[in-house]
View 1 (cartoon, rainbow, N blue to C red):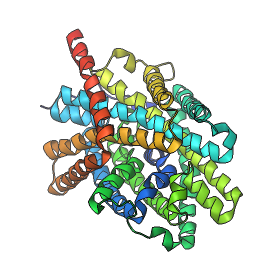
View 2: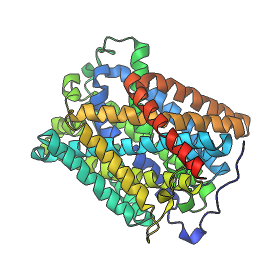
View 3: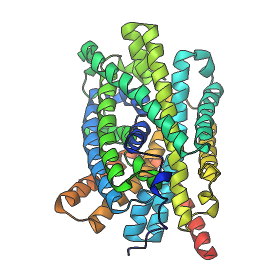
View 4: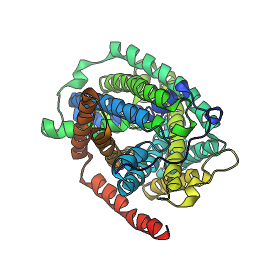
Length: 432
């Protein structure tokens, strides 16, 4: 059942995000911790992880085109939540909003952990114990929360600056590093001992983390100039830019260091640069990684407040989420999301950086797959045009396949967290 749209969006002069800011939000949300830490998580699979990258990049582009079409149809703040609600009704909309919001603060936790890894490559003493590493991550997390509390315009400027500062060095590193790859590091092709099908499914789940965020520009639609056109262009362009830079850099790192070294590294890209060009280069890459993580933290913190604000306006989340401070920021959403991410970091701080990162990645990915699945179904159900419907069908098939690789533990936690939201939905309906 199609529902009427929410109240009219703010007038154009109050929309602080243009094409470049929206594109930076997509690229900055995608290129965060994944590009710099994924080589460590993928090291046990060796060159076989390239199959996962190929499938993930194709699937991400299909999803990007699908979300671009949805943004043209429904250019409203909330992104995946709005698409699910308008296509299927209030309850599916709530479930998608709740699941997607969970994925956001899990992503914030994972990126905060990655920031600690980058700082540890520069100042080892700051992350020499799990408690110190967790403290570094929490400091970055709350710094970005503070920036977002100052307003969407300030968060957008921060996003554009950090995106430029990380994309250019990342592309340069990937292109130059190709000339130094040692092909022996790709042998054997599949060192894990698992079947190729299992490896591909597992690596798709991990590499999908680097593509999560492709839908970022759709969430704060009310703050985007000429939203239908700008969001659709920014979504596709940002996904292509981030996908190219990420695959190039991660593939290069796998060919630069032995698997056992990569698997134990808290900052594999910085370690690769150090091995090639000395410790100064490693420090430079670690600084780029820290900037990248700050940009991603900033972007996800913005999204983690905008999404529940849209749901609260429709009455499916508590009204506190829609209240804005004098700078136009939904402050309650910023603070609650940052607080929950902090709890996740603190509750698991005794894990190694790589283990904590991998757990947070899989949990966030599991919670994000539901909005991706429902978004693709929404266009299949409500969209038009054979070509775009075929694209949505491909995006649906990719998202379904990625569910297989997430693993039982992360899926179980994802299901439990989603079910935990149903009493809240029932209570909100009862109040109405």
